[in-house]
Amino acid sequence: MSVTGTGPDEPQRVGVPIADLLAGLHGAYGVAAALRERELTGLGRVVRTSLLAAVVGVHAFQGTAYTVAGQVGRAQGNHHPALAPYGLFHASDGPVQVAVGSQGLWVRFAEAFGIDPADPLLATNASRVAHREHLVEVIDTSFGTWRAEDLLARLAELGIPAGKVRTVDEVYDWDQTRSQGLVVSVDHPVLGPVELPGPPIRFDDNAFGGGRETHLPPPALDEHGAAIRAWLDGADAADGPAHT
Image (cartoon, rainbow, N blue to C red; front, top):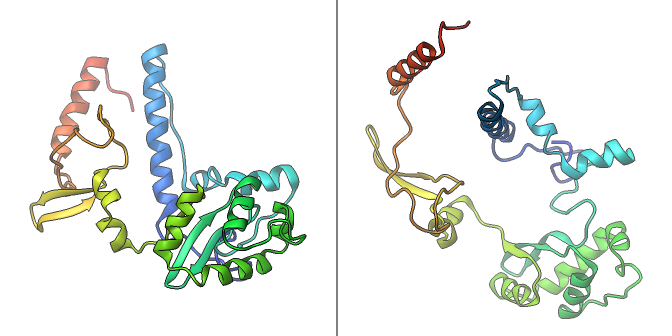
């Protein structure tokens, strides 16, 4: 939270339970790796992770900035702490996210939107970071004459990464989301036909087609418990006396 929010005095939580989700992912990766090692060596492993380990493990540049350089990251609002311009800007009818991640992109970007790329306050990434408030004001002034849709089209022509800030309903109604199988239909025993977020991993020959055509609803409490316990009992019997 200390690196998320509008500024150092306003830490904010992430909009999803990020520690819980990441710990589950790390746990699954660890189990998969341990199963593979058992296949190769015959030896088992105890796999451990935690909520703390999950979030510390994704600190990325914020973590190494401290461990290597002693720099303590602080919330920077919607802008990258080390790159500029790289963040949220405003077209005439809504916000857009723009990522100008190199000097070459900066020159191309500035020239396209009437900004002097050699301005001493903006000429280098370091100077742009140091004068971020001025930079944001300059860009927002330029973007203010553009509609978001037209602006994003122009940025795409320039090869500059950018995107619309979408609401959750816009995400799930988006053709990109639908075409990648990220929304699935299930027949729930209580709710009837419902749509749910689809699996983010695909096991298909074709990444955008094929694969599973039908999906099961989330199981009820202990719905598959008997089958799992029977399988575990069978595995214990095959391996010899059960261990506690």
